[in-house]
Image (cartoon, rainbow, N blue to C red; front, side, top):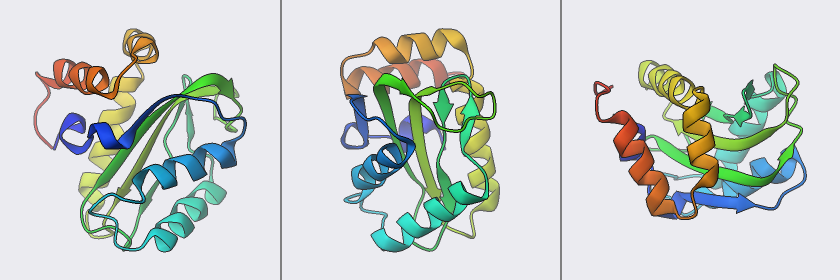
Length: 156
């Protein structure tokens, strides 16, 4: 399972003008609300917020990765957003974020969940990738970037 195979243009939002961590998480949850694999929007919201309360998902290098293993989805769900301005996300490196991934996987897919988290952090952790991503203007261009970057990655 590659990131580009989970993402679609409908679940990519670019250059959002948001001012707080809670606004970002709400926007990401709203973005995936119509995803065909989401079977319980409120449960998904509760599980993502519960995970965020346990520890910030601001993973450093301008990236936030709110996520949950949850019964609210039937299959993995992934969304991506970039922000117009940096915001505080209580990141582990104390730096603001501009790139947000939301990942939700069924509870029984722990191995896949961890592999997807690892793949996202490995790819988005590269400065050149983040710089390219922040310059893109369309969801189609984002998908093309992931397709190109993942062409040599093995399937999960």
